[in-house]
Length: 216
Ligand code: B12
Image (cartoon, rainbow, N blue to C red):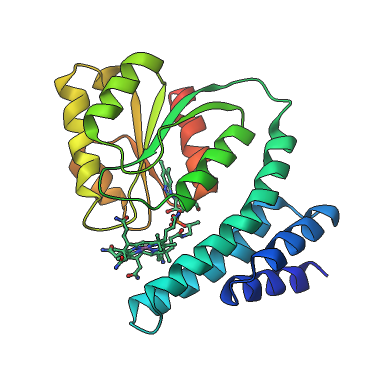
């Protein structure tokens, strides 16, 4: 049954069926399926498919927007369940996250946020299109242990470097760990810009954040 729900969820995203995505996500939760797996293997997989078609010039941006909305409709239901499962754990650290300036992609960031919350982090979300100066200002205010920088485009990932430079300029860099994420990010990029780590998906984001908190 699990595989059927995942397949139907993928179809809902491809058909831009928001109500269907909500209903199927609720069915998956009721059936006791792992909400994180459903998010990745159902919704996110289909959205990436639409993104790939868009990349090949086979889908319109309007279709991308509609598919993203459907993913968010289903993800809302799953996020509640993920947060519920993690609610009983105590805070393991403070994680500040945002999508860098010029970039409005929020879906991946929101999944990472949900997963970190579920793993016990206190998460401060600065939203999307966040300027380097805002990261600095908010880092002073909230004193996070880790800052997560999301960038989904090759044209905006350079802003991750700008945030790190701004933190160095403000003498805050040594006080925080920095994890970069988003589809174009690689380990080589981490080294090039002087970040501490990268997370290639929400699961590895949590793993890496916990490792940095332990000082591994
Ligand atoms: C959905 C989407 C949109 C939606 C975003 C809706 C929203 N609220 O987020 C909309 C339609 C608005 C959009 C707009 C645009 N998009 Co767009 N979009 C996508 C798409 C299809 C999926 C992204 C997504 O949500 N994936 C699902 C999530 C779950 O995965 P994820 O984002 O990769 O996140 C995971 C990891 O990366 C990681 N992660 C993410 N962030 C972080 C942060 C940290 C700290 C860590 C540790 C980990 C981490 O964990 C996440 C969970 O597993 C991608 C294609 C793709 N294959 O990625 C294109 C894509 C990113 N978009 C692209 C483009 C070009 C655009 C536009 C310029 C299109 C246009 N012509 O207007 C605009 C740009 C707007 C802007 N200024 O930002 C290109 C970028 C190409 C490039 N230069 O690199 C892509 C790759 C599509 C393509 N193949 O051409 N887009």
